[in-house]
Amino acid sequence: MARFPKTEPKIAHLARQIADGLAHAAEQFPRPPVPATALQAQLDDYKEKSAALVRSRAEAKIRRVDKNNALKTLKDSMRADLRYAEITARRNPEQLIQLGWRPRRPRTSLKPPGEVRNIAIRTEGDTWLLLTWEPPVDGGEVAVYRIQRRQPRDEWEDVATSIDRLELLRDQPRGVELDFRVLAMNRAGTGGPSATVRAVL
Image (cartoon, rainbow, N blue to C red; front, side, top):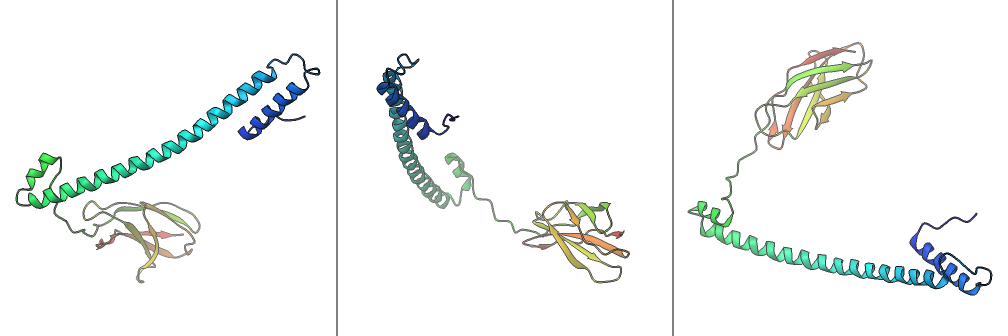
């Protein structure tokens, strides 16, 4: 059994076939619910409105470009006026408030983060453990955390980095004591190491 089409082009094509078929086979289909002329008129109306929609979309695209160009011109002019005002009012920067603007804040150098707090092993398995911690309360904003591991009295080695405040460490050696610590880092440097936690998997 034929299926009613789902896409608009196929629906329009079938409508045209039905209208033509009803018009040429009036004897076989004398009293259809929607006569061929009415169906054709509806198809023509659909086509006209579809064409109008295409035209309106094209016009909307043109208007969007015009709007974006006008906005760019406005922004460039505003920036030019604000640069002029900043230079003119450099000795009295509070005057910029009259323009809805604020004096530029003095640049502050980024500081390294402080010490990571409350490091803990939340849960562990045969060869894995979930390490959690809290961010520093002082220093600059943290960009990334560096997780380090060592066996007692050995050198620390980097084993992972994280942007979150927890890290699942897989494939850890079994049957040995392992110390873990976390350090916070940003572009300015590395904060002091956290306290150490120990695990034996």
